[in-house]
Length: 597
Image (cartoon, rainbow, N blue to C red; front, side, top):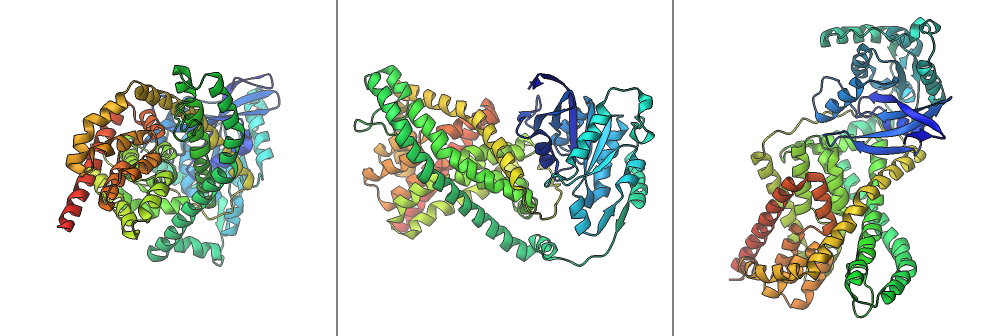
């Protein structure tokens, strides 16, 4: 991102504002798809950086993490303060016209640092619907900087905002600027002085008139109601999950799987024949042949299972989830869902936004683990990632478990779900009590409901999918290679033989069940299928499915856990995982034994 059309990009413009003021939509309006996502050095807090060109200049546009104050109360606000203090050619401060008083506090802090500021007075359409009128000219005079009314979702005011930026960044003599465009002196004020200044500004620039409640207002009230809010949350979760399954499975069954079989499989078959159908290189690239043919799910080569798992089995669910997630974000419902679940999740050491990675984990654990980045502290991310790995079954495992256990009776399908739900609550509570630190309070802006912009949704979806592919693909392929080498060396088979007595003594399973359970690290759903020929009783099959679901994350999840948690925390998470899985399986075996007497 060093140049744009031959123009050097060596200057910065910052995009600063509270959460949920439309910063991300404004960012995509200004940069299009020319953007990357990064973590701030030394942290797990992400921010976006794109390119913005006007006139003969090119700038880095940095979407600073949303913050309410530059006196940090969490890691995201600490990063926001560092980025602002590093300076910039100009700063776009985005204000929500419907919550101007609260937004002005951050704006004043930025102005006090003496940076060239342009204010984007966003959501002026929402303010008008609420009966709020903001005099942009009076606000510009009060703040001493240009103020441009905008509606980011429609593009209103974007051209005027760019022109104001061009004027602010133009290298001209100071006397060429009017008084309203002169940056105020850098004088830091106390919090009390800022609130007094905000009160004075609000009296001068804002007028509120009475208006009747619309159906949208009534829906907003119902969404946070104790009873109606719960019903709406339940409906949204079930609808979102159904939509993710429908979209994900539709992409797999009707598009990606047929393409893989028609286009990729013949090419790999030719490569397999060219390699002689055996040998070290064949085993690494193609894997083993099943009944003389390539099986995408079982061959376990880098170009077979590695590509198939990533692009055919995982990517559709990631795409479906991010489509639904982006819609919930841009419609304004997601913060309400987080608030509704905050009380429950706080008891597990998390806050309401942990519902997002949990829901994603029901489709695929890989994006679920990646989504833990929305949580603020390493402690929360560790708890959420561990709970997802232990007690949130992915769609593939669920489908296979339901298919295998469904023939035995509905009660045998419900038992694993009940055990996983109870384990999720108990394990979360224990981790919350024993891990040092605390859960930060959920401080979130509740935006009004609005219709999402289709172009904004598509840009956000592309941005997220691109980031997922860039991060996950090398990890999945590398993990497949590693496990392949361990299998070829006989280490996995030796581990199965060594642990057979443990499976038999604690879980009541025959020694031959150790192999499929250990091979669950390759593919959990395939491992469930490998249990069927063993002739297990219904009770043994339930114990095996529960143990398999709670331990040995698939290789893709394991690699992403390693990437997100680091080696030491991964080891701790795996230890918790094994103990919890064998404890739950052992207790379930004991209960079945007592019931059978």
